[in-house]
Every structure is written in C-alpha cells, then in structure tokens.
Image (cartoon, rainbow, N blue to C red; front, side, top):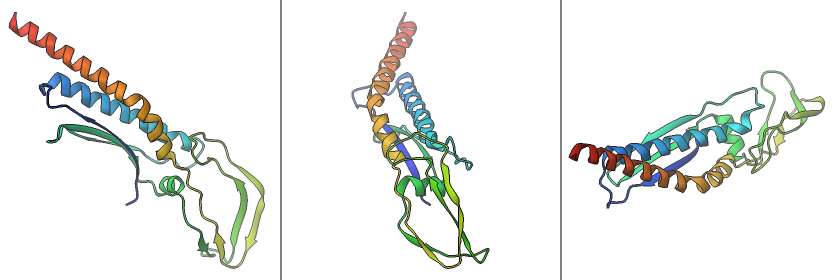
Length: 176
C-alpha cells in the first residue's frame, strides 16, 4: 500500500550506558517530534471535506542502538496529491457523461498552506472519455521533512542531557 511518511531517528552512541532514564528521554523526544510532524502533515488538509488519518509508528531501542518514530498516512487521496499522478484517461461510468469543473486547487506545490479552493465555472458535461492532465505533486512530506530536520538534533541533545541528569541524580540517591 502507498504511504506518505516522515521518519525521525536517533542513534545512541556506544559510550553511553544504556540506562532507562537516557533511553526513556530519547524515546520521548522522538515520539514528541513525530507528533509535531503529524500536525505538520495534517495542515494541508484543513480545508478538505475528506479527512485523512495519520498514525505514529514507534521503534526502538534496536540492536544497532537506534530509536525512531514516524508519522504517516496510507490515505490514497493524500498520497496521490503528495506524490502527484500521471496524465490518465477518465471515462463516464455511473452516468453517460462526466461533469467537469474548472477549479482552483486547495493546495500548492511545496506549501503546507490550505485554502478553500474555488470553482471558476459551472460544470460542463462531456459524453466521451477525456485525458486528465494528472495532479502536480505537492511534496507535503518533503516540506515537512525539511522543516523537521532543523530542530530535531536540538531535541535529541536536550533529551540526552535530561536523561544523563536523571541517571546522575538516581545514582547519587542510591550511593548515599
């Protein structure tokens, strides 16, 4: 099944003792960032009648020392608009004609901004197959991935510091 997905991953260096406070903080940071990514992926759908569902997938810690979280949707409409479609033929099925509308799209390529969309002219009836020009890819996932890369390392650094501090405070309480 097609999927639109943005994934974040952290690799825990070998030099750190893999104690639960550290791992827990890093897991929390990746899950928190995945929730941020999910909110960003939803933005273009604000004006859509059809509301895709977005999920968060968590993994880790794995044997290679990495943890990850991903926000994704398998909604075919979202995936088609995100990735675009090729030109294709459409033909009347339910009725003997197609009702074609001239509209302004609700989204633009490489933008997460949603707008209401607009019908420019009344539908025209076409009684024969036509070639749909396809959908220009909006690249929502690329835009979100680019935005997410900026703050993620800082989130992981903060999580490591918090985890190490919790580990130190836990050690000092047990040794006293």
